[in-house]
Amino acid sequence: MIEQLKSEAKKSKPGMMYVWQAVNLVMALFFGLAAFANSNDGDWYIWCPIYTIPVLLSISIVIWPQLNENKIWNTVSVFHLLACSLYAVYQIFVLLSDLGGKIENPLQHETGREMGGLLIIIAWLGLSRFSSIARPGAGMSNKGLMGALLLLVLTLTVMPLFLWSICFISDWHTRLGHCNGMFKK
Image (cartoon, rainbow, N blue to C red):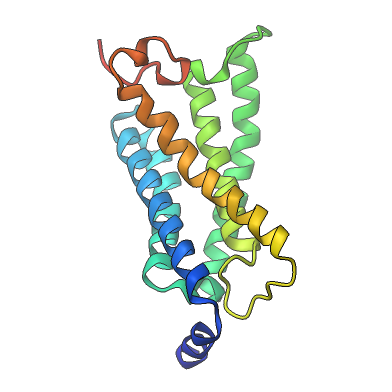
């Protein structure tokens, strides 16, 4: 099996593979920071594992890109994707309860930010598991579609880090709803 993965690695496009590894490294960094940020939360025992599993899956792709063809990697990613999807359904009901029928930015509430994290995980695991980006032997028959998919992946990679980092600029954390509760008063 290892020899088969190595031979498939030689067939895949190296440029796309390097981009995919870099994107996975950035996402591993984001998920690692999210796990660290939740380590002092009241329900850390839920959120640290939720974020740590994508860290491990992304790091494994950085180290060995062909691992996303492995049955164990695929099984772990699908089960975590399913678990996060089910928890996201629960979080929707909790968030609607928190909003109390008012129309406001859901990121102002902890449950809204948690829901945002779940949506990022769901989107990332879905792309990682079910897209053909940088998969060995994947055909590049529709370059426009692959370009759009790569743009989506890059946006999904950069946007959470950007939204998080602007909370550290001057006093912006007092004016942006998604920064509420990040800094102790």
